[in-house]
Amino acid sequence: MAQNKSEDTPMMRQFYSLKEKHPDAVLLFRCGDFYETYAQDAVEASQILGITLTRRNNGKNGAMALEMAGFPHHALDAYLPKLIRAGRRVAICDQLEDPKLTKTLVKRGITELVTPGVAMSDNVLQNKENNFLAAVHFGKGALGLSFLDISTGEYLIAEGPSDHIDKLLANFAPKEVLIERGRRQQFGQSFGTRYCLRELEDWVFTDDFAREQLNRHFKVRNLKGFGVDHLKNGKVAAGAILSHT
Image (cartoon, rainbow, N blue to C red; front, side, top):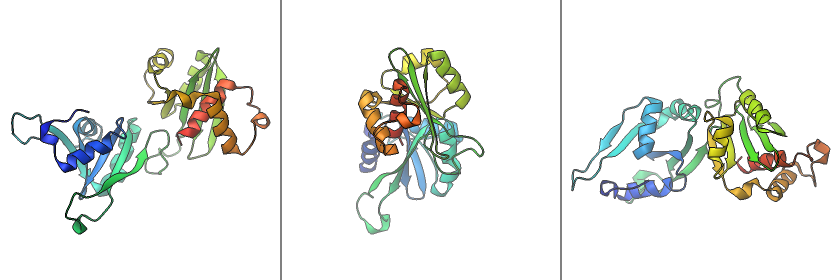
């Protein structure tokens, strides 16, 4: 996200420093009694939430305007679910000290990262509806698939050709799908563009990493007792999911 001269203030430098840590998330930046969004985040938030989009311009040297959109901090429970249900990841940035007790820039930090596939709060989740996170692994000869609903504990694994995986994705309707970085186009060609995708590093989708994650999670030496040890690609997808929760 490019900056312009009108944004070169201590607070905005703080905002961009935090935004760099989660570039694909909408950053809710606490300013006093409000959560503010800036730049492209503000444009998207205004459209999704139906709140007013404004522009701040210092009027010097023809500097570009900075888009802004915000809402009262006590309304977070009303607005956060709308962003999540729109398929957006949200990074919540709070003030870490009392502004009245400091004469310098208030310390801020990311206190919560909420994603469509791992939302837990009742106000974010749809009543009587599963909140599945999925992972798809493009393996050799077959695709691996895993589903996890951390609100209910349901944890599923599958493997097969793309048409089988397509049917499962359609049936379970995951809120978010994890894929290996660089596979977005391949996923779209196989399953369309209706899913909210999250790209992870390639090492997350490896046999060794999956084995380590799964064995540690279930406190076992192997998965033979679960009847899924033969699903090599499915296990890779299942391991990737654990890395994201």
